[in-house]
Length: 206
Length: 206
Image (tube, rainbow over all chains, first blue to last red; front, side, top):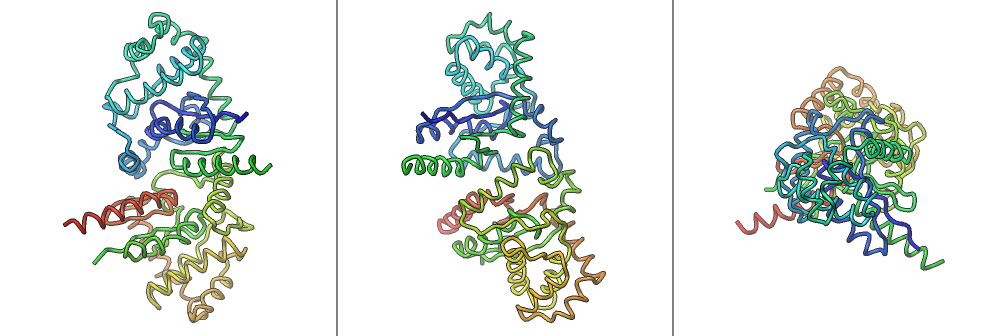
C-alpha cells in the first residue's frame, strides 16, 4: 500500500493554489492519495526568519510577474485577490474543523473550493461569512462551523500543525513530502513526478 | 536580429552552475546568444536583506538535498566543493579582466571552466593560483591576469556590475533576462524556453 503525499499549504499563497489545482491528478497518476495539511506560512517563516515575498524589495515585483506567468503557462485561471497579500486565519481553522467533524475528504474538497474562490473568483475568504457559505454549499452545518472555527481547540490544533510541520523540515509552501523526500514549491512538481516514477520502478523491480 | 539572453551568476551558486551547464544549448535552440554577467550574490542580498540558503535554518539542509536531486535528475555531475559555501571573489574579477582583454567569448569559456572545476573537480577557485592555471590553459597570460584581477579598476567594475544588476531587478542567481522578461532560478528554464518559443511564434506571425 503506497503512502499518501503530505501536502502543506497556506490558503494565501498563489503557488500553493497552483499546487492545489494539480496535486490530486499528479498523485492519482502514481496511485497515491493526498493528505491536505493546512498551516500558517507566517508560523513557518518565524522558524527561518523569512519574510513574505511581496514585502521584499525587488522580489515582490518579480513574484507578481512570476505568478501571472506561471498561471498562464500552466493554464490555470488566476486573478490576484483585491486585498492580496493578507493573513488568512479562518480558512485553515475551518478546514481543520471540517476534517474533525466530516473527515479528510470533505476538508480537502473545502480547501480546493476556498483556493478557487480566493484566487479566481475574488471572494474574500478572510471573512467568516464567506467561509461558512462555501462550506454550507458542501453540506457542512454552517452554524456549528461558525462557532467551531473560533474555538480554542481549533486554534491550538492549527498551532500544533505548524509546529509538527516545522519539526519535519517544512519552511515554506507549497511543501510536499513523499516517502520522506521533501519537495518545496510548485516548481518542484516535475521532480516530484520523476521521484514517484522512480519509486514505482524500484518497487516493480523488487 | 535577436537580442542575447542576459545571464547573471555567482560562481559559488550550485544552481548557477546548473544554469551555466545548460544555458548555451537552450539559447542556441532559439537562435540566441548568451551574455555572461558575473555578479556577487552577497551584493544582491544586501539589496533585499536575504541570507544565503545554507545559513538559513531548515532551508539549509533542504537546499543541500535539492541540489543533489536536481543534479541527478538533470544528469549533471555535481560534487559539493570541500569548502562550500564560500565567498568567491577571484573568479568574477578574473572573468571581467579576461572579458576586457580577450573579449566576451573567452570570458564565457573561462566562466564555464571555473564552474566545472569548482563543482565537479574539487578545485578551490577562491585561490589565485587555481584561477591563473585555469585561465592559462585557455591561452590567457597568467602573469598579467594575476596582477589585473587585484586592480582597483576591476574591483570597481565588479561593484558597478552588481549595482547595474540590482537596477534591473536582479536579486538572486541564476537570473536571466530575455527581451526584458526576468527569470529567476534554474527551475525557470522551462518557462524561459516556453517564453522563447512564444517570442519566435509571435515574430513569425508578424
